[in-house]
Image (cartoon, rainbow, N blue to C red; front, top):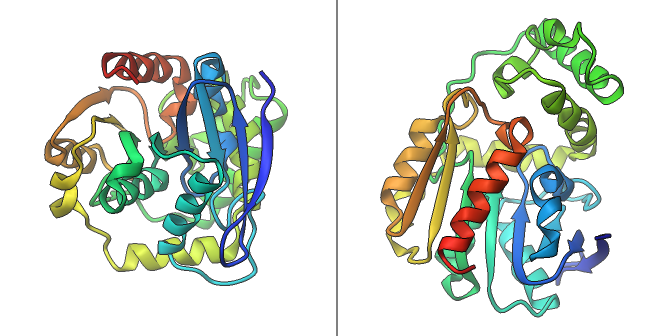
Length: 280
C-alpha cells in the first residue's frame, strides 16, 4: 500500500513532514536521533493492511528541517498539532530511543490522547555506557555506512563495521542489518540538522529523568530492550518497565540499539502480539 505524505504546518510555522499509510487503528511512530519516519519501514511496512501508520519526521530531522534553535519541548506541541490536523483523538504510540522519550512525555501530559505505548530501546531515565569515540572509528563509520548503502552483502563489510561505531549499534552483522543501515541510517544522519543535535545535547546535559512520573501512565505499555545496547542500556529500560503500572517487558539477546533493523520480523511479531492481546 503506497504511503501518502503531508507537510503539516505547526502554529509557529514549522513544517512537519509526515508519511501516512494503511487503514485501521492509528499507530504514531516516533523515530530516534538521528532518524526519520522512514526508519520504521522495516518493521511497520507489512502492518499497513491492519493499521494506519503515521510516521512524521520530527522537527529538525529528515524532511522537517528548521533554521532556528529549539528545545525538546517543541516536539510535544508539534505532535499534538499534527494529531489535531489528522483528527486523531487517540492513538497508540510506538517510540524508538528519543522517540520513546517523546512518547512517554505525551502520555504523561496528554493521557487522553494516548491509548497505548510501545517503547523501543528507550528509558524514562536514559543512561549510556558508550565508550569514547576515536577519530579513526568515526572515519570507519562513514566508510561502513556508505558501503552498506551500496553493497550491504559485501563480505569485507563486517571487518570494517567492527572498527566503526556500528560495533556498538548492532550485534548481528548480517546483510539485513547493513541493508537497513545503508537504506535508512545514512540518509537520516545526513538530514539531521545542527539544531536537532543541539536540542538533544542540551537535554542530555540536563540529565533527563521522568521515572518518578511513570505511575501516571495508566494505558497498556510495552518496553523492548536489547542486551548489547550501549546507547540506552537495557538496565535503564528495565527500570522504566518496572515503574509503568500496566507494562510488558521483552528482552532480546544478541542485539543492540538498532535491533529494529537487526531483527525487524521478530520485533514486528512481538509488537503485533502485544497489540492483539490488548485489542488494539
